[in-house]
Image (cartoon, rainbow, N blue to C red; front, side, top):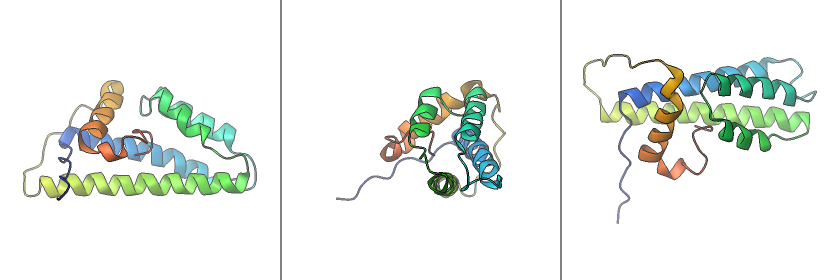
Length: 143
């Protein structure tokens, strides 16, 4: 028996996901660009980045706390953690964009949805529950 593929995210959900991945990736790239990454403790810098993402309503506070709890203590392991998170974000970005592109290929351009952060968390949560339930145990903070 073949597993049924989840429906593709609609245009608004795809735009929200791309914004989500961009903002998280931007913070991770900033942390990885620090010359001290891998050499000294980056926990304070991570807290600043996560606080910004929570303040901008990109990541819900509970998801931020869960992610930060997995941040290692050793500087080299912190660098690896940051690199792995960035790779995960990049792969999720490609997956959502590919999924949307396959479902809506050949359609004319769609209007850009509201860029307001007011509904970003709800849009991402709805997308993860409706379209990517297999990844929902990790929550939208990862993807």
